[in-house]
Image (cartoon, rainbow, N blue to C red; front, side):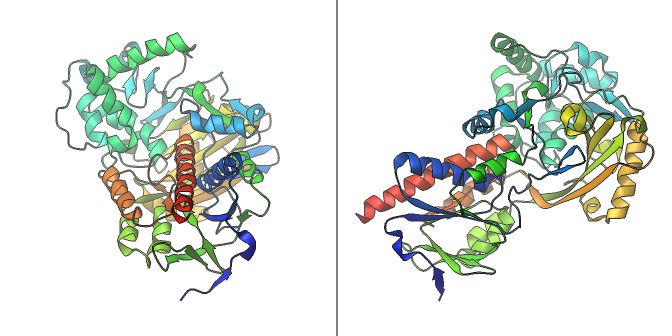
Length: 495
């Protein structure tokens, strides 16, 4: 029997809501609940439990000797409104900074050389034909195969398709290997042969169905965009004008979210052992590894699905099994800085992606201080090197010295770095990136069916409906609204 030690007897009708995890999802859901409860004049007690000694999850920023070092995401996109809207509501409008307009393009490695991604090539859809015909990234055979997208018929089958299968079918194998795989790999750190198109980039399936061609769809979308806003015609790859960061670093967002919660809401160093309930109508019990067991009227779990599975295993082994079925990849981000005169490459872009076919031991290099010049002092360059992911998992286990040798060697070969770095930081993300592999949507649907058996238990986070910051915030806010509604319905039923 669970010995519930902590429950304030004077709460009356105040509902206690416990959020597990103080990453972006947990803080965003807690902030939304606080917003809604205040607006509705509904008294609630919020508790946010975080196992680590800091908040922010994968968002991690260090400031050292004029460098702003990001250990996780360094920006977010604005064409999905949820992150930018939240920043405005938090009073962070004056903190929002765009990418520098001087070098809005990216490179892709081919035979050890950094070549520009063709202008207008957005992840999987070429907006312009001439850059495809002139790019040295593809052979003539590969270029002509891309243009066949204009003639390839729509797919008629309704079965799920991998991202790789879709791209091979529409643009050809070479475009997949030389452009799409490294560009998409930079988002999901995954293998496109395993990733589900519908779960990762469903808009491209819709483009094919509506227009019959990715090229036609992209060009028509570009025409519509021109009518709405001025486009940056020099950009290649992603639409870099849509990416923004925060002047003080990305951790300003979780820190500000936490500061808007009532004092004492967030408790770090509070790891959860298990969740349990003694009956369908009873409260939830949150047993901590170190500390009194908490009682809650509603629980929201925002941790990685494999961590959530451990907490719920005793209560619902079938749900835990489904949560464990979502695979994860590990990765390493290495921040390294040099004097500018130690780097031969002009760094006239935002970074470079490395195709798996190149067989190099890194995934990408981001030129952080080119994207956001305030990230490093004048006369220096701050770089981020990405290692591991689903395609090279063994590299995540390298020791610090071996990893340093690998990174400095690759930087020497690819961008001509010489000498010792001014700064070197390693951030390891173990099993932190969910892989939306084939069957992901079915797995998520099965999880939600099982979750429906547990009143006032909610799950949110990047394991389910999108890995980007805006998607994370959207899901968290929707979950918060569902919590408020569930508690209101429970109160009506009890009246």
